Length: 215
Length: 215
Image 1 (cartoon, one colour):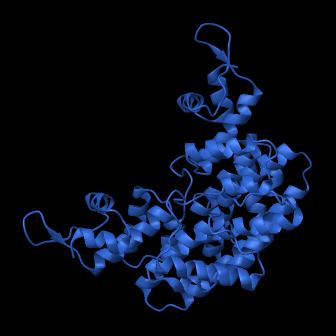
Image 2 (tube, rainbow over the protein chains, first blue to last red; image 1 turned 180 degrees about the horizontal axis):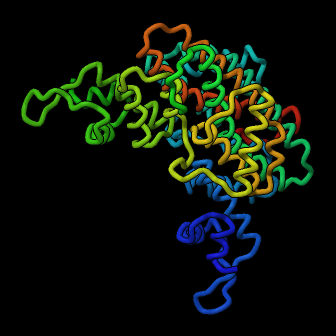
Image 3 (cartoon, rainbow over the protein chains, first blue to last red; image 1 turned 30 degrees about the vertical axis):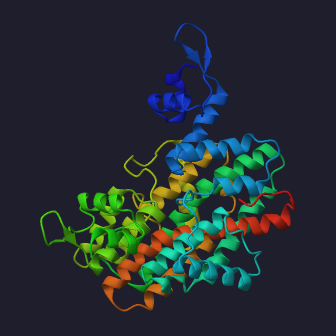
């Protein structure tokens, strides 16, 4: 198929597809004539995957490239791939070691202890995200927002168990890894949407406001 | 204080603060002499808030402006403010109405029915995020990742209940709204980090892999 058809089938505009090709995220199509290229089902699949990660999941091009590279490594572990697929705050910066950074790290260590989780590596993407966000709450004097950490951790346990139950039903390693990446990114968006709807639903009961606009 | 001190206290580089001022997100300091300005505690608080929303939360400048404007409206409802604070996929585009968009919307409607939640407005940010992400899973042939939606919804209910319990302990409306915005953005990052750590923790048990690198 021509690039116009690839665009139609994936819902991704032609200039965007050309950009992905220039960035090396999509293979060049097969050249049939001067300045013409044809694409096949593998291109359709790849462009749809990029659409999911970039347009819906909000990953940067650099981050997307890194995630796709982990999938191409020989025998990557699921844990390794998931660690790279995680949406990230500014992880290039060193972890915070100031007073509020330390308080946040201590809150995390105490939470892990209470829940019986293994203590995460300080440098892991999950721990970094947690500590950055919690330290920022301390910065703002909003540490009361950490009061319900156990409820959050319990919800995260349920979600992780559901995620792994899905993965466990699969057999083919490459499919497991692709599902793990896409699931990490897209199910994050799903969960965000559900959390928002759950707020709306619960707050309507708790703070009735007939004039409330749907958010 | 001078801008250098404002930078030191907030951890935000001077050029970034100047950018926020040019964008109208931070008030100009009080002019004391030609080309000099002084800043006070209100600036420290505002710059820290921007750091939380932009650097940690990953909101765009345009989105941040919109969120801060909702806080300045007379008597905004919590539901209204939360709807605007939500991290978003590409909501400028019209909602998907193609086959997979319809399947996703049907999956959401069925889930809401099973959980006894009120049906969300099609245009609401929560429903939009859910439908975009779910439609994308159908596009990729990964709709088995939707098998555990009830577990996700149940986790979202727990998180929303925890969020509202925190809000209910507060008294002052402006503080409630600020907490709601910051909590929506930063606790999303917290939850993402916890989900990632919970994966790591659970997958270590289910798929032991001593060579796994911490992600």
